[in-house]
Length: 138
Image (cartoon, rainbow, N blue to C red; front, side):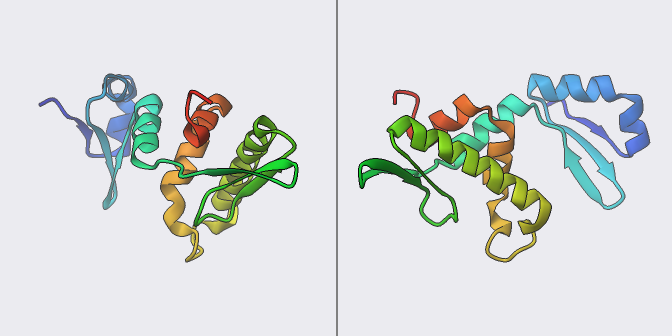
């Protein structure tokens, strides 16, 4: 098995092309910095893995002449006059939550475990988030 690993930031910087090439091909690519080790991963592969590991569980319900979307257990919900409007508003709400998480919620006890969700939101475009929320056939 071919692992691309560099024991220092300086070494990784000198071989950045090799590190990125390995990650893009799906190989294990890591860099050690002080006592920590960081993986370099292709965004598409990571996003796909996160989406499969963390299904949205979103609930979309018709109510009061409109639609509501929420994800049980998360402080995120949205409403719209139509199904599509509600889903579009949910995507906006997810992006706002991800921004808030990055700025101030990542260490809050009731939010810190949402790392996977935040990565998924941040690495997805709107169409990918829509598919994750309601499935590709809706």
